[in-house]
Length: 144
Image (cartoon, rainbow, N blue to C red; front, side, top):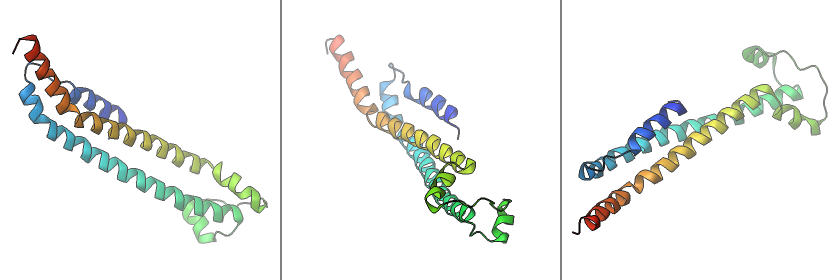
């Protein structure tokens, strides 16, 4: 699910009808579960992307050190690396590789999504307290 859709969904779910606080209170567990499931899925995707990055770094290291087989080069569609670089410079080539940077950007975006969902879950968890406070305020203002 894309980030814009998640934000739109959160905006909708975070509003509650002040005249139906009892109904809103009963909806809290379903809303919590909805975002917990979404968070779990997004967190698993983040873990998968981080694993892919580790694997890609290994392949790029093999590529830049000239240790990659012709079959592997063909499998990835990469041309043999022609430069001879120092061992100390290999990390510079790997970390600045376009594919590595793209995957790191995906990971950063995915981290933001999971952080956002984690915050949403915390807000949903405090929703019951907000509803209780609203009920107490209504009682206070009505002299009950």
